[in-house]
Amino acid sequence: MEEHEFFLSEPINLVVGKVLSLMGVNVRHGDKIVPDHMILMLLVGLIIIVFAVYLRRRLSVDRPGAAQHMIESLVEALRQQQESIIGHHDYKRYLPFLGTLGLFILISNLIGLIPYFQSPTANTNLTFGCAIIAFLYYHWQGIRKQGLWHYLKHFAGPIWWLAPLMIPIEIISHFSRILSLGVRLFANIYGEDMVIAVFAFLFPLLLPLPLMFLAVFTSVLQAFVFVLLTIIYLAGVVAEEH
Image (cartoon, rainbow, N blue to C red; front, side, top):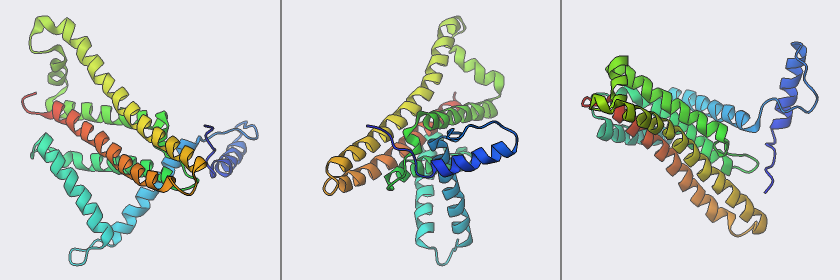
């Protein structure tokens, strides 16, 4: 099925092209400078920023609103998940990153359910970008926790003479996590978008709505799985016995 261009793509690329032309950059008319998934990614980021500013101004201890209740419930659920997997000593320092990552993926998944919009997570550039960020983050936290030398030593395994075997296995295992995170998220969101688009074309009045409710569940589930796996990877590199 042919993928339709995002309706904001043409005007945004036109403006960007004119700005670049004024700066002396040679841009041909009709060139797609900013791809659709990049525009949608920036839009999701803008939505999060605006919502955060809106919520911050309305935070209240005595009379919390519906939005505050929702965010507090999500934060509490994430906190309990982290505490049960990572432990109560370290989980707080990872909460802002994991919460932001999960919220970004969740909104990116859900925005494709809005008519004329697309899910940026239905593009491998974004899903693998999120996977690489999670990969770099948990390695960096492992180095911060244990020190570079002690962190690298675990790649050699518990017995020194097994190091030539263990090091390649560990390296392949860690890099395969990027593939696992990126492909899983992309395949599920792209698949659900295609199914909804096909059924909306064939049965515009009957089936799309129930499928969209199912897609909401899938979108939430995929954001949860991505964050949960990142928590598990974090727990593996910051554990005291590691």
